[in-house]
Image (tube, rainbow, N blue to C red; front, side, top):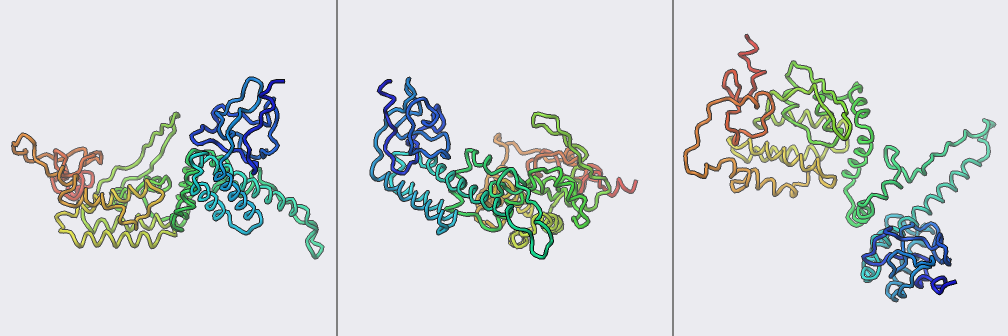
Length: 436
């Protein structure tokens, strides 16, 4: 028997294995309980297997023993004692779960422990301990419910309760196990951030609905389209709502008066590729305050059908944009429309923003509306050679087909109807073509 077989892990009065600061959790680590050497009776069996003794590199010696590490400093031991006391308070139901986890994180963060242990991984260990306690409490409650006596009045035995294979508190909306989500690299950091700076109730509700919608987007869309109360909206824009993408107001405006069918379909090609076809390209564009209001109100009704709690948010944003239209000369209303597209796109791509977070759009406003903005200056910049820019004379066919990616200021051709050369509509909707 070698000398290394008698070496014990570093002293830890709380029985919790701590990851050293800068250590790689799970990188070659081993559990002393499963090794061939002596065991550490203080290690809790329900601790995550990626925790390693402080001071070690997560590797055992040749004889299966745990390498010797330094003693934990008094400040670290005091912090761990405080964390264990918080866990005990939660077990006694004297603290709520969110408050307990918040206090544990603050205790680890504020006592200088970060120089000795990996705070995030240690916090994850306490999080697992609390979740394991909750799971055992729920399991006991379910066992008790199954053993209840028959219902009074001689109605016979109570109906048997079917246990879910996953405890209810470990399930997210839509049935996805939270135990799996907790393994994502960003999960612990997001939990810590949400406990310190929680989202507003409005954002929390929106996020919960998205978690349900995105479980099966196709099924969600089918349910919407078969509902007798769903508002009128192009098929492509229902797809955008369900998938958390911004609504195309040009498509909404075109769909209100178009006679063409908008039967969007998609087929999966595998490898993350999807072929979408059948969608009608927008034939009308939002060009002023009037058309913007018409399209936005239609989009607002559809959004509230899926997110009914966002009524005040959408109303406030509508008033905000209308105030910008009122304060801006009508010659520059196209800048307000471009700003609206960019603002709604930012909110759609973020899960911590609402349309009423107007201060988050300050950079967009400068770039796309103010005279010094990069979007405005680039649009009106003259050629570097000093030669006069040739006047535009031809209609842009790509714009008439809904495929032009440039705006009216940067495109080399005119964004006008290619039939009558008049702005405000596209070739497929030209009155002259319809008359003929």
